[in-house]
Amino acid sequence: MSNNKYKILVVEDEANIRSFVETILEANDYQVLTAATCTQGILMFHSHRPDLVMLDLGLPDKDGLEFIKNARQDSATPILILSARTQESDKVSALDLGANDYITKPFGTAELLARVRAALRTSRFGAAQSALPGAKFTLRDLEIDYDRRMITVGGEEVRLTQTEYNIVALLSEHAGKMMTYAAIIQAIWGAADPGSTKKLQVNMANIRKKLGSKPGESRYITNELGVGYRMYGENE
Ligand code: CA
Image 1: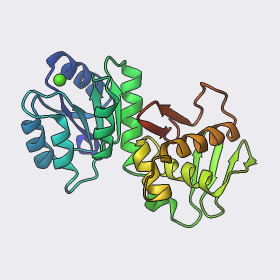
Image 2: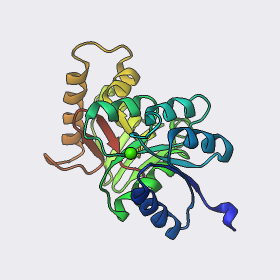
Image 3: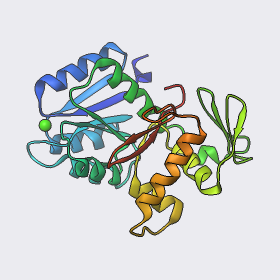
Image 4: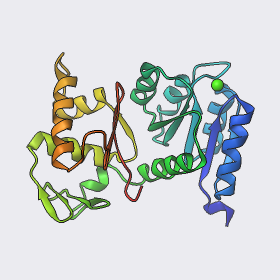
């Protein structure tokens, strides 16, 4: 029975946060492994092959970014950053190195569990799946029909430009993952130019309007200023 549990590695040097996270995860039927340093975390990652990693960036021996670089050499295991840092550049570096998402300390139980579920789902859905015949993405009343390149909200077709559709489809293929501006620009337009971020923001504003989101509201896509965009996971 316990073999079916998801295995989560928590790499965090602060004992109180580590045990808080461990207690919540174990109470929700996850198997938890813990490490207090980056080096120990890397060793445990390779010996235990967890399903998800929760990683603090400020570790005593090495920067948590070193963990991400190491893990991403041969693994797509989702990595959720436990961030105490408010600096956007650290989050962007972590995401661009391949972290899936981050959660800012202090966080509550419900938020933690929602992010864990979304990150675990990310590893099962993805670009490969959207390419399958008849593949559809559903998020509450929003549906994406990848074959027909059509998006509906509440059964009504939303008229998007090709670029707008490509952006929404891309975010949906990575639902639950925070995508940086650079990663989206690279995927949609290829090379970046000085106007790329502005161009992306203009497209996103149009998308949000067409999907029926009011200013300040994020029904399907959240925007982390200076970092990127994240589409909610299916059923999140
Ligand atoms: Ca720390």
